[in-house]
Length: 115
Image 1 (spheres, rainbow, N blue to C red):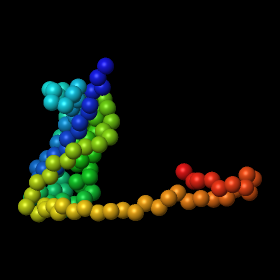
Image 2: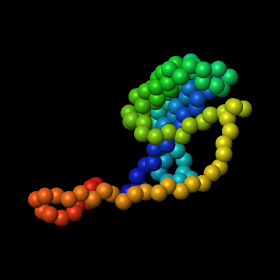
Image 3: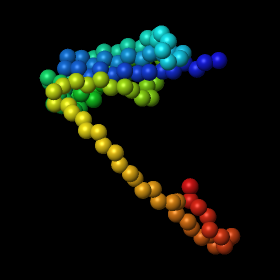
Image 4: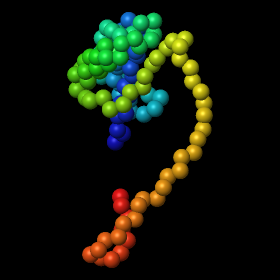
């Protein structure tokens, strides 16, 4: 039995915010659109967020409409943005991770690792 994979797309445009929820059986197979939501894009001008609160409200309205149509909650999204003000920089890095702290317990007299 194959498990259907859900994909959510969010397009944040100057005139409107669109959210689409789709499902597919396997990569490369046809998708079924199960939810769509749109909202006027308040707070965005020429592709730039000028009012964060209004932009958040527009995104939430479109997402709620898509969730209601699909009957499912959105867990993650793929976001589409465009504009001349956007740029990216590729970089790599290393993060040191310390081991879990050790503590002594009086009752057992032995060290225990914290989870």
